[in-house]
Length: 266
Image 1 (cartoon, helix red, strand yellow):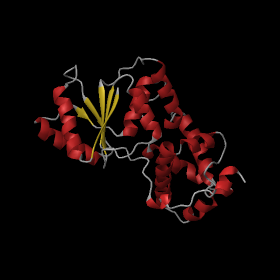
Image 2 (cartoon, rainbow, N blue to C red):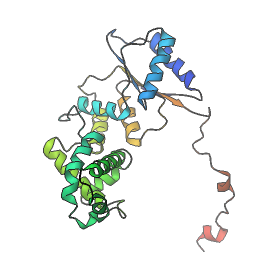
Image 3 (tube, rainbow, N blue to C red):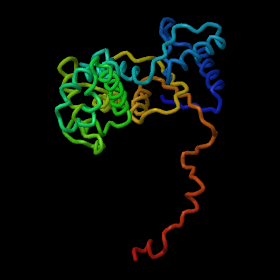
Image 4 (cartoon, one colour):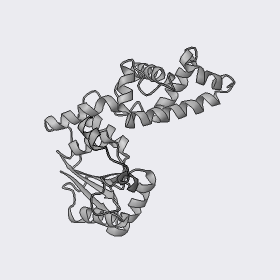
């Protein structure tokens, strides 16, 4: 079951979470509570807050959404490695290896000038880190670009034509060293597997998602699919008790509407 709880105060959500843990303990006394958070700082605050509420806060894990989703990929799907080969540190070092070999391509003229005077490789390291961070964001928020690039396209890269080429080179190198699997090409398989039947993998008895202000659509779809097999509780901060997703700004109401002739197609 997938259940959403919302409040305009994080302390209220924290107390509700503590009430759940205290009144509905897990079946196994050795099982760990799993609480998804948006940052290590939130995890540290929540540990201390739960310790004050429960007197003792132990045997709890606080994974970030990306690492938890990859754990579920590894548990539910075959042939998925335990470690994600497309983390930012992993991509950084592969990009360090790839960048010098790509500078001969004309599409990389924007980058080649920056790396000309780089005797100790410091600029290459910094650039690889920035690109790794960028590709990590694309894997989360631009999966359609990733799919298009891997099919030979250049969607969204009109001003940066080197990006699709470098991504394809990165995928080829990663496939040689580890696997071709990444979050984009695993989400559909994961959701389909959960929707078609009960997976053989051992899933957590329940899952709490606490204080995350926004989730990428694929992550939310995966959590909803996971909710068919275990209890998923989403604790969400919300400034209003009513649905406000359709609220429009005042200037939208003041815009002139179409004329009768326009509506009639004249």
